[in-house]
Image (cartoon, rainbow, N blue to C red; front, side):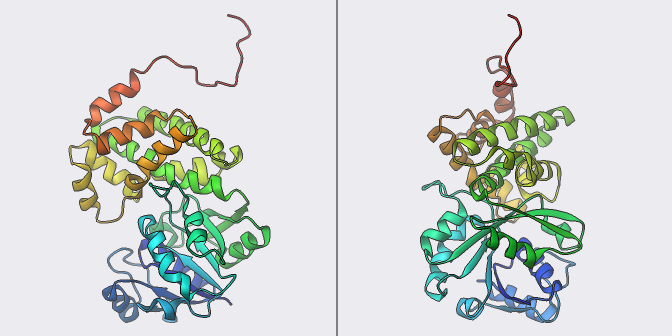
Length: 338
């Protein structure tokens, strides 16, 4: 049994709390919202963000970050990506040397273009970091439906330790050393999922969805490899796997926000309607900046930025994507004849 703190009581943090406590670990949950803390301690349920998932009575919630962090074997950082840096900064004076912190949110910081584990390392340089990524909707993990995910860390024994914390009969955990590739794939797939949602909102069909997923992973892979990730990662659970589930499911807040934008909502109104942090919006500019930094083509990510921040209509953005100059799909293949 390990002593674990889950920092963040949103849907994903709650689903992971349910998993960890069910695995027999001693789990405490931290939230900045005292109403969430009272709700979890009183009813053992996150009734707003993950209704129907009942937490074991052994789980305690607290609004005291010091109480949550103190004397824990692992800290699971589950706040939305825009709050990763500020939360890590608050945690820094409370963490011991070598403290294991598992980042489970998905995003890239716009100004610095840093991944979330890099942000944590910058704010808490004496900690040990790992990441948890993959095609994992909280609504399904909370219901104990069969799911596969990846634990990533620079050191093998750390990844295997995290694997052991989470793995059970419904959550199969793989390991990977490619933390950079995992995090870039996890962040950029949210941007493509926004585009997939916009296409749904416009009334486009399955052909469109298949094209967006396939060409979307091509963009993510180009950027990810140029930024230091490994090609195999983008063919796995944290690449194409995560992209498929986020583009196809109504559990995806990114897809839901995209659908509303496609139907005519402004990006701000769409995010208000979804009532959760739409991380693809926060990663869109960073994705385009990464593409520019590494000299990679990213037409889908660029189109998302045009719609989100430059006032271009979704229908016009689709037409611009379709009418680009003719191109070859498999650029590494050679013609046998002209």
